[in-house]
Length: 146
Image (cartoon, rainbow, N blue to C red):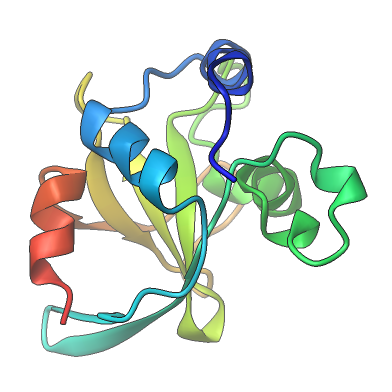
């Protein structure tokens, strides 16, 4: 089920972000799941989306999907997606698991409105996430998928 308004408000407050309207619409229509059009190209490389990450009401009680919840993934990636150890909130939010351990993220580092970027697990270190921009918005990203 889609996240309710209280859960989304909690998420935005806890992580100090404002989720973009196009991504919120996506969550209401499809909170997680494997997309039919699940590939996109970036700099000559093909990426496969394994699944979008849901925002669940209670991830700890969802045996099937709890491990994929955005908040759970944020806690697992921890300092590898944080740019500043003194930052309150997050400036990189994972939204989809990609094949081979990378993640698709909403990237708030440069702009108030997030871009969509690929987080590379092999090139990221604590407080030094390696992100490559894919699209200027979530809607623009969806147009790239095939």
